[in-house]
Each structure stands twice: as C-alpha cells, then as structure tokens.
Amino acid sequence: MIVDWLTGHRARMERVFHELDTFFQHVIDNHLKPGRIKDHDDMIDVLLRIEKEQTELGASQFTSDNIKAVLLNLFLGGVDTSSLTVNWAMAELVRNPRVMKKVQDEVRKCVGKKGRVTEGDVDQLEYLRMVIKETLRLHPPAPLLLPRETMSHCIVSGYNIYPKTLVHVNVRAIGRDPKYWRDPEEFFPEISGQLLRLQWTKF
Image (cartoon, rainbow, N blue to C red; front, top):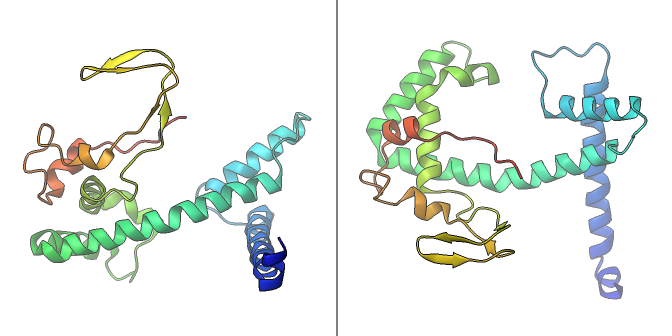
C-alpha cells in the first residue's frame, strides 16, 4: 500500500476508475433520456429494464453500479478478443485472395453508396459471417474455454473424471481435429460457416 502511494500507482488507478465511472454514467444517462430514438434495445437497455423491474418489485438488488460493473466486464473482455479476431481475419484474407475478393464484393454490394457498414447491414453479410466463424475455428482468441466442474463421476474417452474435477476444453484442438474437419489447417469459410453454430453458453 505504501509503495503504491509513494510511486503514484494508487492515485493513477483511482483517476482511471473515476474516468471510467464517469464515462459509464454518461452512457447510462444517454439511454435514460426521454426523447432518445432507438431502432432496438441494446445491452444497456436490457440492464436498465432489469433494474427498473427489480425496483418496482421492491428488490432493488440490481443498481446502476451493477450495470457499470457489467459494462466494465464487457469492455475489458471484448477489447482483446475482438482485436485478435480482426487481426487473424485480416491475416487469413491476405493469404487467401479468393476469399478476400468474395468478402469485398459482398460488402460493396451491401453498403453501396452509404460509405460504411451499419449494424442493420450485419444480417445481410452472410459470407463475412462465414469468414469470422472460420477465423474463430482456426484462431480462437481464448484457446481454452472457461473451466467447468464435474458434478458426478463420468468416463470420457476412457478417462475417469471424478466429481468436483475442473475440466478445461481445448477449443483450438477441436477446431483443428481432422476427425471433424476436412483439411483442418486450411482456411475455407464455406465449410465451417455452414457447420458452426455460435451460441451463448449458459453457466
């Protein structure tokens, strides 16, 4: 503690925390404006609705501080994973001119003269979605999924796994397993894009 105080680390941490808190509060306040125009609910709208419902029920356990904590987790967890995925996708597109041309044609056709891709365009960019899935198959930003604890004894591939054992899933190995993928080291969006179904995993 004294070292942090002497070096100024604590003061810098508190300043950054205050800046983030102010930023998140500004985002929340913008979502609460009465005349705000929106096409659909985003994550913050959903969190604010939960807060409102709990307050009306008298529970009040979910507050704006909880919303800020969720946003911070999304902010920190989404920066590295997204940037890594974009980097690998660009590297694979450079290595595969055929795929790059198909993506470029699809984006240009969808965007037209608008000049940029909007959130509403995403559903129309089917081939781009396949490219992202194929990138995640070959280069997952987190090679090991979150560990799970077994609830009961089971046998997997001849291995005894006892209750309360932490199990890690090597998603990178699964994505390159020749048992499931034809030419697993090749970047071929048309195949994995149709087979992979990206879904939210419940805890």
